[in-house]
Amino acid sequence: MPGLTPTPSPSTAATSTKRERRKEARPGELLEAALDLFVEKGFAATRVDEVAARAGVSKGTLFLYFPSKEELFKAVVRENIGGRFAEWNDELESFVGTTSEVLRYCYQVWWERIGATKASGITKLMLSEAQNFPEIAQFYQHEVILPGQALVRRILERGIARGEFRPVNLDYAVYLVLAPMIFLMLWKHSLGACVPDSLDMTPEQYIETQADNILHGLCVRPEASAGTSASHDPSAGTQPSPSSLPPSSKRSRTS
Image 1 (cartoon, one colour):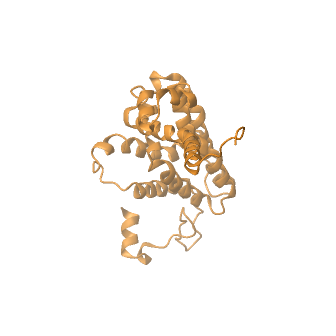
Image 2 (cartoon, one colour):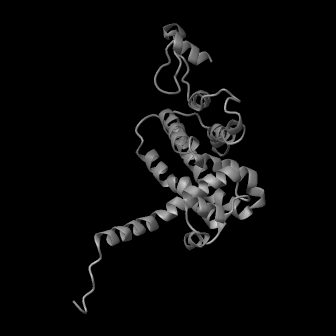
Image 3 (cartoon, helix red, strand yellow):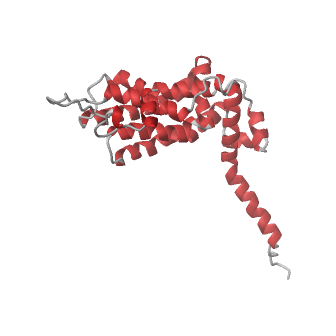
């Protein structure tokens, strides 16, 4: 009838819904494409038109969401690393267990959520290109490095306050924990990417070994009472004597 707006056909409505969903998904698709290219090519060599093309949109559409390559990179860092520190701090607050268990859990979660993912390539990018892009370097320092150091410091402070860790210089001890992570990320995105068997190393076993060594140095070791030779296991409880361990355990502890 004249004057009435025709009701959209089901197919038209479905197309409109798909377009809306597509529009909502675009920022995430652009960030994913940008992460891929930043890790593959570095910051300087990545062009915004390449990011747009990989995400299946025009360069103009990309600029609707991210006004520059620098802002796009910052969004990638926040999405994949910087935005997770609030969650990780909450996990530390609610963690029930020894601080040795906290530290082991920290390494495990870091590897699963960052180290084993493409996001770990951002660290190599920053170490390679920071000098040429001081504004980006300052941003990364504020969004990733300082919060990461603060989180590790809280873990160490927890252990000292509970009498589990011996007092140490926290300004430097944080790097004991961070160094194995940085090594793995650099290896993964440099020689490890070109020669996968270059170190013949399992990352999970490497992390476990590093955690053992760090805890061996950090944990308080009460003096053995007269007539006893029991020692303290950094992870929890009393360490069994080598003779009581199965052969596989003996190998893992001596390797």
